[in-house]
Amino acid sequence: MDIVKTASDWARFELLSTVAFMTFGLAFGLAGLGFRQLATTDLARAFTVPMLVAAGLLLILGVGLFFPAQARLAAVPAAFGGDAAGFIASEITRADKVLNDYRIAAFKVFPALLALCALAVPFLDGPYWRASLITAIALFTVLILIDSNANARLQDYRQQLSMAEGSTCSLATGLEC
Image (cartoon, rainbow, N blue to C red; front, side):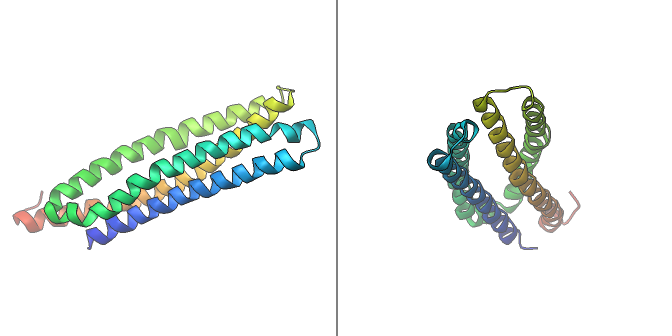
């Protein structure tokens, strides 16, 4: 198994996730500007600010994740070449931490916030409240969609790392680790 290729592929997919965040951020921004220019009702005009805020958050998230993912992609061959077993162990530790973060944020916190926003929509009458809640629902949906996809890829990467760890240990020591 070529662990460098596997790690590089995973880093490229992470770059793709950041591009997805930025693309959705641009879409939210364009929607906000569209509401600003074309809105004729109070509710439609109320979407301008929440959409632009959501766009800003998604763009910040995308850009903030892009540069570390790009640096990781460039560093994979050197890190693996220096200490293969150490690289695999550190990647497994990092993957476990990120999987735990996804388990908490993407599969518990975001759905709970989404449900809370959905439950609040009928009870809050003002157009700004409704626009904000509907935008938050859309934002959390995007976050869950991208993070669940990243979680599935990370689980596969973690499994490949575990298989590589076993083969690296047995090759390096001649014994099972």
